[in-house]
Length: 458
Image (cartoon, rainbow, N blue to C red; front, side, top):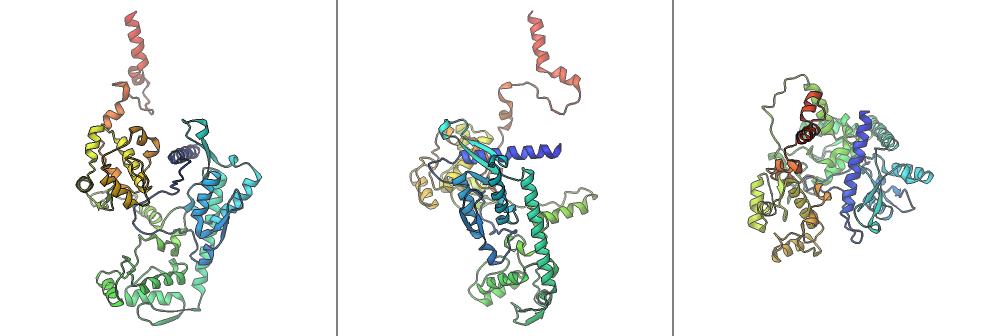
């Protein structure tokens, strides 16, 4: 029953999210945000994809028509599904073999109606009938889809393990060290151990690595481009690069850089989990019997980003001050003047983020060709503190962050949260749903108060 409840909640959440997303996209202006946005940190790659170039050239066909694209242009196909067929596939990045996934569902949808497999989402449900549309959501809430994803993941893992075994047994390996130009032949482990021992450059145990040749090619290209392997900075010559990597102790790769994930076995073990998540689960199992001591816990600093430029700061007050002094935007003033509650502030920030992302002035709705142009217009036209009607931005779709890692949302003041929850019922007691004392329930019941008032008046 717990699993069924989980599925139901997941389906409701997916429906609400997609409904709000599509509700915010007018049919006459195709300004689609097909994937969650994030402020730039590190470039990401899909770990479920073979690093060989021939895999990217594999053709993927639409499940509902003959339209096809190379796998490297997968985003174009996803856009085609939304615009032409109103079909959304959830958690695409967690599908281990996207071409096989699409092929399977193309065959199944040709046998049965699409509504047998997809949740149907109605947009603009409160609006006129002619503006209402129906979208289809294909996700792992459907047991058949979940089994398919797990099967593809298992098959991919088997392929990876076979590839790793071939590399372990391969004695024809031949390569020159990228640091000293010594040549190593035989097994790949001889070169990897040499780099770790003689150059203090370790990429981990050889048995934990797959696609070793592609991995080394990738690292070599960075060095050829005079790029540091850890911080990605580019230098003017090899001597400067070597000094930098030595002094800064950057003779290693950055574990947080996801472009390396496809070269490590651990990232293929569990569907949708990175090596950090798998490792953290192992760590929790190791210390579950230990004393819960949080005294040495250190919070990771979170940087908030300005609404109008790329300025970042770990101090929220500095960001507020920066926006007020540099751009003339005072969020505290707007909160006071408009009497904004916490969730209204969330909606407002998400609305401004989305409008600027779509290169549109949030004050007058004028459209521009780039973000710098719209920012310049907002400031020069004096629209920084000019907001549209509340009904424009105080909409359910703006509950969802425009940028997933928007730390500014975490700093919004919730000082009025108590008044938000008071609502029109005043001091009416709220009964916890897990209360077991029926006597307490009877004493605090609204119905008992109403009955007493009726008796006294009669």
